[in-house]
Length: 173
Image 1 (cartoon, rainbow, N blue to C red):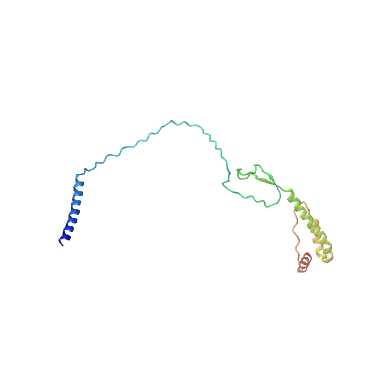
Image 2: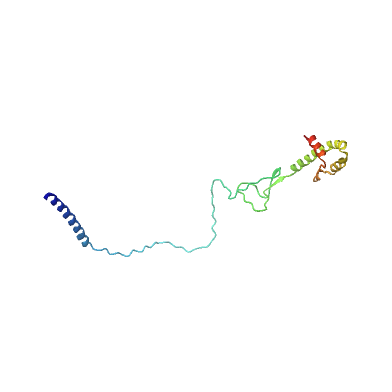
């Protein structure tokens, strides 16, 4: 037991002596005095300002894209003709600029062709109307006479009775 006590007292005394030694060494150290921070100066070269126009030229390669994409859709058929401004990629347009023109004579010719086919079909039906519906033949003949290929068509006549409506549907089927 004597040996255990000696070892324990030895360890405790070593710990106590080491703590006292650390405190004694800390007391010997001089306190640090803080030095004021050194001011940093940056050297900059300065020139007097001269006002003048500077032209910048940028040369670059690549693909240019527009900021706003616009889809153009024609509601009529026809050949596209050039407008006031060349219609190319990257071209700027403002409001009321004519982008393209349409060659409208083709559409006019197609409309006249349709009117002509309608008149031919009506001319083929008029004799049947005269035979089958003598009371309405006069109105249809007058309608046929007033149609002009160059101007707008008059409004079509309405079928007044169900019998006429049914017979027209049977003939057209």
